[in-house]
Image (cartoon, rainbow, N blue to C red):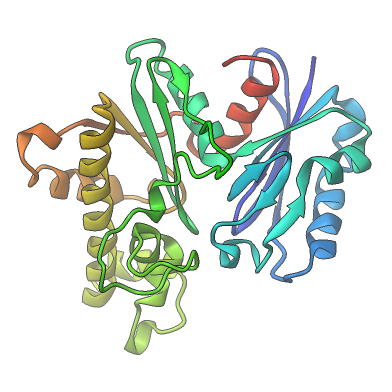
Length: 292
């Protein structure tokens, strides 16, 4: 069977046809609409999937935010242009006429990356650093999705990094996401870097800009502290890092340097995402296949 996998992020929308062997048959991508209206997201999704869904048997969605009963409830609405409540499964079912599964994107990516480890670890954590900071946890070989109604399981970016830090879009002060994410890096920029996005700041850091380098170090340090907390909480044996910031050149090495400064009990193996930027798509396809 062929799965139409969709990844909804704060910056881009991606869709791909995925076969049962986890091959990407065809892939498309669009920017996430900046508009705060559900109609704009619905229209963008329609445009994205129109050439693909006639060849699919089912739909699997990996989306940023909390997914509850097929509805997107964004813990940080700013990451999706202000959307707070969006009927994901109903929308895609209406567009495609196919059965639809929806899951948090970092949880989906965590499952794909766990399967890529080939059974080497029973306990692992995936952290994506991109527009926001998300996470997925696999314990004893099982994806942790949360058993309550809150849907917060794995939202590691909304743990506390600095109680005196900047306001996060979720309403808390000093979340890891508010400091380490691409949006957080850009928000802290001053002077000549004011208004620059994270990609530009990474470029400027590579050109020797001191402020840009410090902003990236600040992000990496916050992430290393989060990883130490995750190790203390889960005793995981491996942490996989993904996302546009997490996979940016030199970033993981900085995280490793800061993590090495923590006591030995908090050390854990770090590695980049095997599936790179397609981990969410492939994880959603795996879950739609009943692989869990």
